[in-house]
Amino acid sequence: MIRILGFESSCDETAVAVVEQGEDGKLRILSSIVASQVDTHRLYGGVVPEIASRAHTEAISALTYEALEAAQLSPKDITAVAVTSHPGLIGALLVAVNFAKSFALAHKLPLYSIDHMRAHIASAFLTEDAPAFPFLAITVSGGHTSLYAVQSPTESRLIGATRDDAIGEAFDKVGRLLGLSYPAGAAFDALAKEGLITATGKTDAAEALAAFPKCDLYRDPLYRLPSPALQGESLDFSFSGLKTAAVNLLHHLSQKGEEPDKAAFAARYTYEAVSAIAKKAAAALDTYALPAVVLCGGVAANSHLRAALSALCKRKKARLYVPPLSLCGDNAAMVAAEGCFAYAYAAPVGSELNASAAD
Ligand code: KG4
Ligand code: ZN
Image 1 (cartoon, helix red, strand yellow):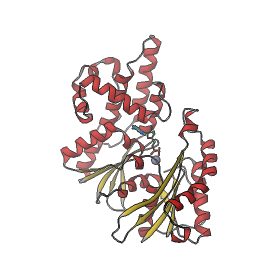
Image 2 (cartoon, protein in one colour):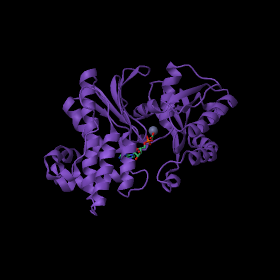
Image 3 (spheres, rainbow, N blue to C red):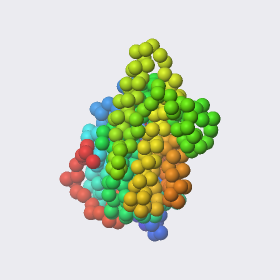
Image 4 (cartoon, helix red, strand yellow):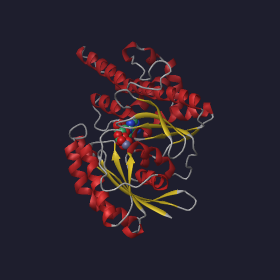
């Protein structure tokens, strides 16, 4: 029996969790505590790094003992410590890295350095129906939009990524212009749903997406937006292109003194964002002959993206794994889950461990 204590502080969530791996290899969450700072950052329209670091520092110690208590464990019951060391906001990352180092040293436990994006992929293993290797991992978050061909716990290859903005960032920035508060993802999702239902008359998300290109709104030049899927064979994206076109369109309307139909606009924007991911995912499944898809990261909560990928996987006869909503956003259970793989396959790190903002 392995029990991993996981720490996460890469952005605006301070999180601590304990995950247990049984003899059968299955992972089970014993506790998972997330202290979100979004209410604080919302006042500024986005994450303020210095405020994030301070809030992590204030929260992390109490959260650790809360997580141990919730799991009904004491430090001596823990096998190893896992902490997100990259990528993220450097000052924010340093809080959990230093706390985890001290905890591991004080309790003589091995320490593992975790990549935040690999942890998002590992969140899929925290469900009853864990994926089998190999699979295509689609990681969509506030800072990343990436496709990985994952062959085993230790072998994964980045096969596509955004060349500029991430999909979550694109939703947040354009959402702000539509008057949605930070982070705009969930409200954008609801607004797009309204727009898609009005445009297509279909309440089922997958049916609405399928019908959308044939409806009048899609052909309306007023709401024309470019696809973030790069042309040709590349599996890369450009969400900055979609975002800039949207910003220009909204500015143009406001200069003419016109109000946009926000739901219609959100529908078109979401359709382009989601279709681009589905298009490149389809190409990736074919090119790399992968039998399954793992969709993860904060934007995996998007109902239209889930519907588009579910339709795609049905068509391609591929299995789709999407973690529950509670595991899509940043949390430490996913860090502890990746920690289980690290414990089995990687070397522990020492007190020289440092945080890094880069991938
Ligand atoms: O993975 P995450 O919690 O943090 C990062 O590692 O970035 O992802 C946060 C992102 C934010 O951009 C947020 O707006 C987006 O996930 N998000 C959504 C939805 N829920 C959260 N985006 C679209 N639709 C949603 N339902
Ligand atoms: Zn994340």
